[in-house]
Image 1 (tube, rainbow, N blue to C red):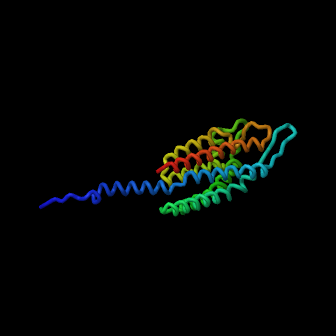
Image 2 (cartoon, rainbow, N blue to C red; image 1 turned 90 degrees about the vertical axis):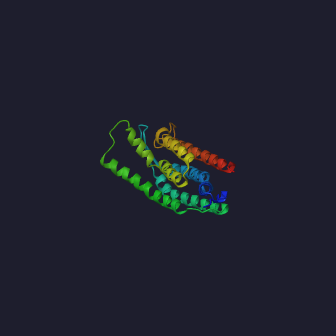
Image 3 (cartoon, rainbow, N blue to C red; image 1 turned 180 degrees about the vertical axis):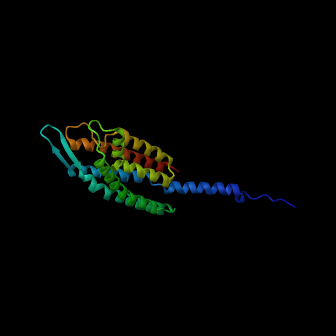
Length: 228
C-alpha cells in the first residue's frame, strides 16, 4: 500500500476553514447596520413634530398641566413598519450590488410584528393601570421602566436586539445594550426634561435619542467602509 499526500486545495480542514471564512465574509457583506440605524434615527427625528403638534395640553389655574401625547399613537404604528420596509429595501439593494444573498423576510416580519406589539403593549399597560391604579406620590421605578419599554424608543431597542441576532453582530449588541440603558434608565423619555414649555420638555429626550442613533449609524457606516 502506498499513501499519497492530498494537495493543499484538497485538505478537508483547509476547505472547512475556507468555507467558514467565506461564510463570515458574506455575513459581513450582508450587514447594513449603519443604514438601519440612520433610518431609525430619521424616524425618531420625524416623530418630534407629530408629538409636538399632536399633544393635547390642558393647563389648570394652579399651574399644573395635564397632557396626552396622541401624536405618537398616530405616528409610530405606521412609522415602524415603514422604517423596516426601508431597511429591507436598502439591505436587498446593497446585497445585489455586492453579489451576495439577501434575507428580506426577517426584516419584514420584524417590522410587521413591531407595528402590532407597540400599540398592543401600550393598550395592555393602560388596561392594567385602569384596574390597578398607581398609588399617589412618586411613581414606582418599575412603572417608569415598563412605561419607557413600551414607548417607541424602547421598542426601537428591542428591534435592534432582533437585528443583532439577524446579523450576528456583537458591536451592535453592545451599542443596543447601551442605548436601552440610556432610554430606559437615564433619559426621562416619558416625563421630559425640566423646560418651561411642556412640548419642548418632551421633545428634548427624543432629540438626544435620535442623535445617539444618528452618530452610531454614521460610526457603523464609516467602520464598514474602512473594512477591506
